[in-house]
Amino acid sequence: MGCAGFTCSKNALCALNILYVMVSLLMIGIAAWGKCFGLVSSFQVVGGIIGVGVFLFFVALAGLIGAMKHHQVLLFFYMIILFLVFVVQFSVSSACLAINEEQQNHLLEVGWNNSLTTQRDVEKSLNCCGFSHMDINGSCAAPCFHYSTCTTCAAKIQEHAGEVLRFVGGIGLFFSFTEILGVWLTYRYRNQKDPRANPSAFL
Image (cartoon, rainbow, N blue to C red; front, top):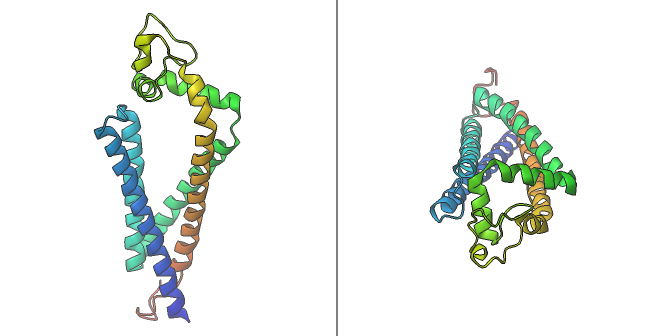
């Protein structure tokens, strides 16, 4: 029974970390693809996504190696890091789901004003100019600017912002529960004795 429980915990933890590795590689691949095809020109956005992907990859790799070798130190640090990631992700996901329209508009405007490259990306992809008002004498990356038929970007962004936040919040919440499952599995697995090891050894 102990052997079966040990193997079950090990396999479940390995499967969870393989999923995290796949998600991290997908994040890195999508960010690189978006940059190569000119969908996103902001280095901050691309760098941020790739950075999170690389961090998740190394955390998952540490968890996978720790699970395969039943390595006490790796499993301990993996458990601590995964719990901290859970706290942050759960908080952000809850905030995304709980945010009201006024707060949403304020955050969108702050994000808009902080990056000119993001402004150009949004104007080009949504075919709009300016956030809440359009400057006729200014510059705009949208095709409609040449024909003076542009609407403001705030109106177009706000059409989908609520749905996007709910989607991101829901996905984040789902993954945060897989992380707390990972913490529980790691704790359980770490305290189990390896049936192949010396019975007198401390595990």
